[in-house]
Length: 132
Image 1 (cartoon, rainbow, N blue to C red):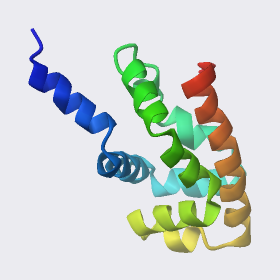
Image 2: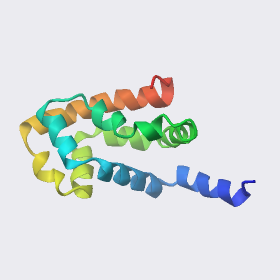
Image 3: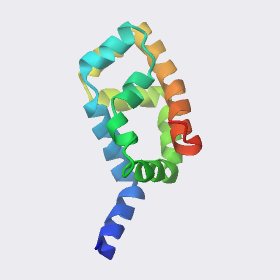
């Protein structure tokens, strides 16, 4: 039987800005350099990186409600990240220095801009409309 402390720990993960930043950094570190390079080179849909890579977690019936709750509670932070392409670029390159050169080309910047817009729409659909 779960203890109250287990629930408190889970809630602290959901409502802690630093934990959300850790989740974002962890997600960035999961993206393989080759996958990002291929997506940029082939002008792939950003959803391939955003959702296909994390599909096993996002569609898991036990994790999905928790993930949606985390996104909803921290929606302002999610919006700040995805609506500020320069900040997104900075977050990516600070957490993955190997991405810095890759994301410095005009083509990569256009792709990242499209990725932010498309990613926002996809995440919004997952969190608020539940289309995924």
